Every structure is written in C-alpha cells, then in structure tokens.
Length: 439
Image (cartoon, rainbow, N blue to C red):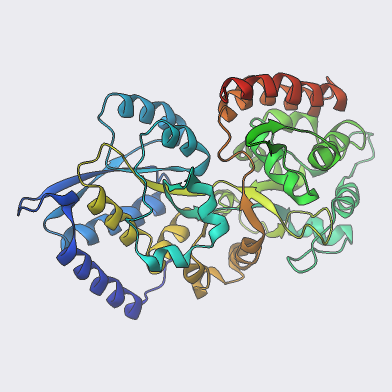
C-alpha cells in the first residue's frame, strides 16, 4: 500500500517544526552551537526505514541548530547493545525499543523521565491505558507510538469451502467456535488417512508472549500484583488459551505438532500451499504475505477469538517506544524530536511503513488505515481491545521467559508434560525467580 499525500497535514507539521526550532531548549546550553543527537532506530522493513529516514531529513532541514544522526539498530540484539552502551556512558540520545524492555533500563536510571518534556497535545492524543506501558514509579520513560494485535490470517478459499461463519470484530468467534472452525477446515483430501490440510498452524518457537498476551481474552493475566509485588499465577482463566492450543495439537489433531518449532515466517510456505488454513500471526506479517504469496492466492484477516462478551477482543501488546537517555546532554531537544516524530500525520507514515497500528487516536482515524485492502480496517477496529501486556513492568520477566516459561510452554504444547506440570513450572520456579528481583 502506498502512502497518500496529505498537503494540509504536512503544512501543519512544517509550522510546528518551525515553532520547535525557534524554541528548542538544546538541553539548556544557551549558546548558538549546533548539537547532534544520535537516534538509534530499529526500523527494519524497507518502507519503514525509508519513512523514518525521511522524517529525520525533514527535521534536520528545519532545525539547523539541532541535527539528528540516524543510527541503524537491530531488534535481535538491541537489549544487550543498549545495556553495554548505557553502562559505558555511550548510549544514543534517542532510543527506539519496545515497552517490555523498558522497566529494567528505567529502574537502572538509564532513561530520562519525560513527564515534563512532552507537549500536552501528545499526552492527550495517546490513550492513558497505552501510556501505562511506559510509566514506572510515577515517571514516564518512553513514548509508545506503534503497536500490533495478533490476528488470524485465513486462506479465503478454504474458509469459504468449510461453510463456517466468518467472524468480524463486531461478532468474533469464541474460542469454542474457533476450535470447531479449525476442525471443519482440517481435511484428508485423498483419503489416505493422513491430514492434508490442518485448520490452524501455531508457530511456537517463541511461545511466551502470545501465551501471556492472549490470556487476557479469557480474563487471565498470568502476572498479578500482591502487596505491591509481582507473582505468577496460572489458574483456569490464565490457562484457557494454552489448553486450546494443547488440545488442537495433541487431541483434536487440527494443528500440526511440526509447526510448534516454527517462526511465523516458517509457516508461510505451508499456508500458501494449502497445508494450513489459518495462521495466528502478528498484524505486520501481512507485509510478508503480500510480497511472497503466489499469484491468485487470496487471504483475509480475521480477529482472534474471545473468551466471551465480557472480555471483548482484549489482548496484550507491548508497543514500540521512543525514549531519551538519562545521560543525554540535550534531553529537551531529544524529547522535541520525539514529539515531532510522533505527530499523528508522521505516525501514519511510520505505521504504513511497518504495517502496524499507531497508538495515536488521531492517526488511527486516518482514512489510509481504514481501507479494507490487506485487512487494515479489521486491524484498526481491534485497536480498542489492545491492553498493556501483563509482562510489562515485571522485573525478572526476561529471565522467567528464557529459563522457565519458554521450555515449559514448549513441552506442554508438544504433549511432554500435562497442565499440572506446566502450572508447577511457571508458578513455583517462576515465583522464585521473580522474588530475587523484588528483595
């Protein structure tokens, strides 16, 4: 999808840019020297990189005294890279990251509190529930600007041939309906006793985030607070979605065991070949699908199921964020650049480039994000149900995820352990891990 021109919006952005240039605080230097801000960007898709670089160039053209240097980063190693640079006092002024990675850096004193550095228009434009993803101990340590729901990508032909009701954001499937639909789309087309098409393929090479975030759809959380401390629980509401996945793989055989070790990208060839009828994937995977799908292949975007009307389309997300290093000598200038980047018309360009949704209420209403093509409208309609991931703000989450939860979920989904074994691993071993971070 190509980004449309918005002449009036661009004019408004240029006017604001000139205002910022005239009043830019330069971190309180008070002289006429030019400063350079390093901006670590994690944009990785070609369209996203182009949109981000274009905004940097636009800023630099209108801010001769505050120049921004674009530095390309990588999601695969950003945590370790940032930790090293923070500890060495060499961190970039402006940091692109995601909300789940902020708590340790904020708690370690590496990120600036932006509470008094951001304009009221920006604070008002992003919903408070989204701001909660970057608030810790009464400080505000990042601007959440892009987010993405998990959705079902479905083979249109197989969906129609199954005869099941097609869900919409207004009338989504329940998890029970989803299981029945998966069964209806599971086929042995040649009668040889082997499944030729599975109703769904769960890519679980990294099972924790989706297992935790989708628990909100059934009223769970996995992470709870008791007397101000975090603890892991795994009761029926928390485990309901995990039980569906386990049942589909090990009992109903409507999902293949072979997909459990795959990434989302790994499942795409089988999806195009008709091996899998539906894929639960992050919203941005639509870009890969448009690039890789064979000619004539038709697909559609469906909402993830719900545990019932009382839960709506709730699911957890960890938005992408922009933060300022505490060690930056020009915190106010860095915050003004972030405010420029996250103006609604700019975030629309970034969202289209990354195939994600903006957190900005104004940006989300942009017509470019409300078209039916490639499921944009469906995604935009899911935005109201997005909630902060329960993992955000949990000290020790990364160790719990890597050492305990990932192997435990993988063993459960493959049938090696039962629900009781999963619950014991997540809670007993897990809470001992979290306790070390809360002493």
